[in-house]
Image (tube, rainbow, N blue to C red; front, top):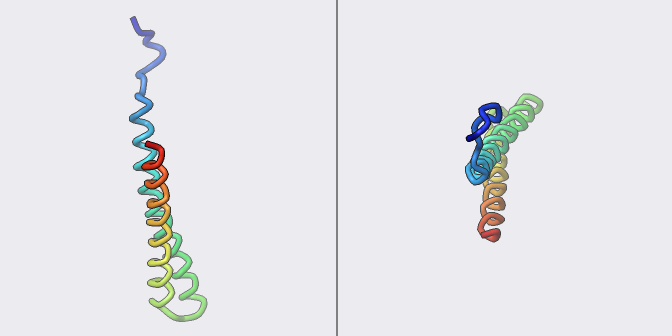
Length: 79
């Protein structure tokens, strides 16, 4: 009989999948957000309203997707 004080046991495979998909979401979201934040700062500093925001947003999204690509390729090689 299981000890009720231990609580539920989590499947390590489930935790690995949650970490994998969580990392994908965080890579894309953080890269895009940071790119937009830097672009907004540059726009306010130099008075070029949408230019730097758009460029840095796309650059940040590209960096985020590149991070996802690296993560997926590492996972493919691991299997």
